[in-house]
Image 1 (spheres, rainbow, N blue to C red):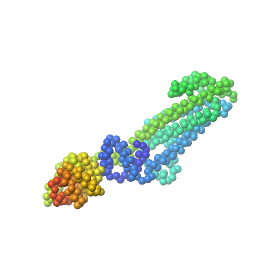
Image 2: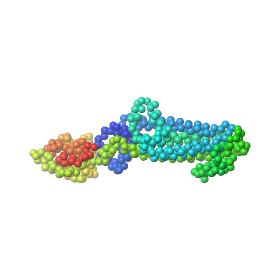
Image 3: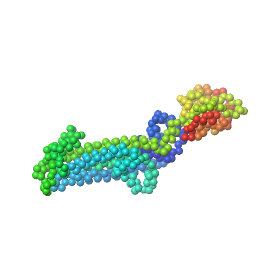
Image 4: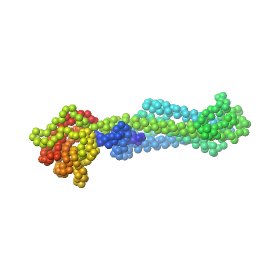
Length: 475
């Protein structure tokens, strides 16, 4: 479940022409997902996606989003690198103040990560200031510089505000992570290519001991494993820098070879605070985006009605009044049934696909271990194979609005040789809740009267009584 699935589902809902009967067949096929509606919609989306026109909206959207993100990530990396070079710039006249770099790789990441975590709790609010001041928010503005056709297709996409906010939050963490990687690259590059003298200096009244305590606390994550990456009290005392005139303190010059040891602490501080912790927040943002996609699936227009078509029977066969046969009085065909049993040894459908048989059986609350399509596109060999497997009571659905053909009668003659009982059940269209008019059933009754087989029965019922409880037939 990802943004691509969401966009494909969005596109499908805009052009969805699937029938209620097909959706119900899908719901029955994946009935185990009934209580996981989002997963059910994702599976439906994967099945229907090939019907969408190419290029897919999701491919266009994600491609341009990737290109924009890649561009901004590159800019962030370069910005971090040159910021690090600027902070570590050393001319040889005065040492590099480590406090500036510590502030950039410790204090700044902690502050921005705190704001990011707070913005995650405020992501449901479409007017969240913390989200909209993020550099990633301005990615959408770049869409205005894309070609007109791409602009129009992307601007038509109405993304849930919750999902849009999480997209911004996630990309903000990615940009911040790239900026931090740039800082680390600058630090390592400057240390390798230059002999930098580090020192610390502040106007505040901070003693070397207090400064050592603070650094020891900041190094809690690695001080036990890598104690050499924590400045000692001696190094801190030797590297304290006081700006008095234009000359360095002689003690500092005497210990110049030791001043470069600061880079170890700065590197570990960058790795832990600016990269590792930021990566953890990035993972949280990915998890939040995933949950936002899941919630957004159900908020799209048409999603709830689609789920209803999948998970609710098309009609209910439980009538408030007794069913009444409606055959014409001059017909003497007496082998009729007013109701169906709850199960049969086999269910067949004349020119009716298996998926539709599943839906029809579900709507009539009938079960059977075997369902087969006969007639229609089947070959004679396929029909004969199904007939030879027939036994016991066979329920045979037919399209009631079509009169019986000679092919059907030939098939029925063969079927009654193997089955003990055949119930012919003419049905109407799904739009009419599978019910028929009296004259349509009469046509079938006449034909079966001439067929004259004691094994063949005709299912009849009063249409009004059958469809009285069909509130979902038109949904």
